[in-house]
Amino acid sequence: MRFQNIVVGNTLSALMYSYIHNFPVVFTKAEMPRRFDYLTHGIFPLLIPEHNHSLKTFNERVAVGPSKQLLWDRLYFSLSLNGLVPVSNLCRNIRFDGEKAICSNEYSKICEIKFDTCHYFGDHNAKGFIREKKLDDDSYICYDYIAFNSGGKHKIDYIDTSDNFVSKIWFYSSDRIDGNTPVRDACAVSKLTGKQLLDFDYSETMARFKVLKIMKDNGMRGRQSGYTKKGTPRHYDFRTTSIRRETSRIRGKLTATSPNIQIKTNSEESMLRLLQNAHNSCSTILEALHVSTP
Image (cartoon, rainbow, N blue to C red):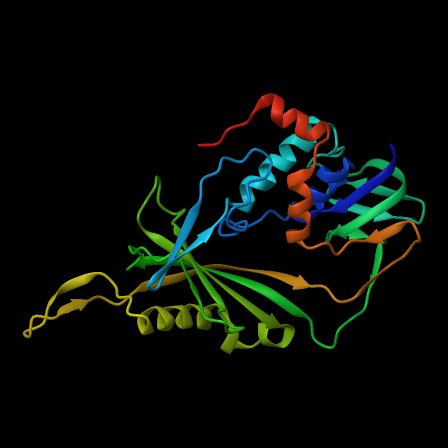
């Protein structure tokens, strides 16, 4: 295949850039937004229904826009229908040999793509496009998922601590129980260094303990277990287990390996402003289908 312009990247920004400019996009493993990632309040691109949401924290509700996952789905859907995801989700590795991008799966080469300009947003399985300046100690965004086996029924959506270790706590309807259950599990988000990742004081266990401490410090309690002799309610302790930890390394300074590779650092906010005014063959497809979401 040959294209004048191609986008290499697996992020939401890469898909938005591809949609805005009508460029084909290639990636390996999609880095989809997480279930608790939301757009700014009042922004409804790509015919997303104008339903405002709010998240409950302590003593207030915070207004947010639609889910970023919904925006991802619409971008991927419209780009695919327009033929702008040429290797779909079949690619596992992308290698640039100085002249072309070679896409492969776990068994063999899928295709070779020649291009005049590559707009590079980042893909951990894309090799040869950039050089990265190594840092003394890498930084990571960590997501610690925690199951609440008892005490998971409450109305709080998130807690912001402004601390690097467990900076945010997101609560969501548990995936471990079928249906729209009132039981909520949690995800603690942290920013850690490579050394801290190897330190037990910053482990999944300690993240879980800190989440419970923050909840108790803010007046949250487990399931009620009766009353004391003075008539005050008694509560069981929270019972929790760690589900998994996911990490994403924050990359250092990048330089392109070829003059025809442009490293893109566009913020999601700037891309969203352009996306709202974009009108091309992709947007025509969405308008024709008039996709609606309940």
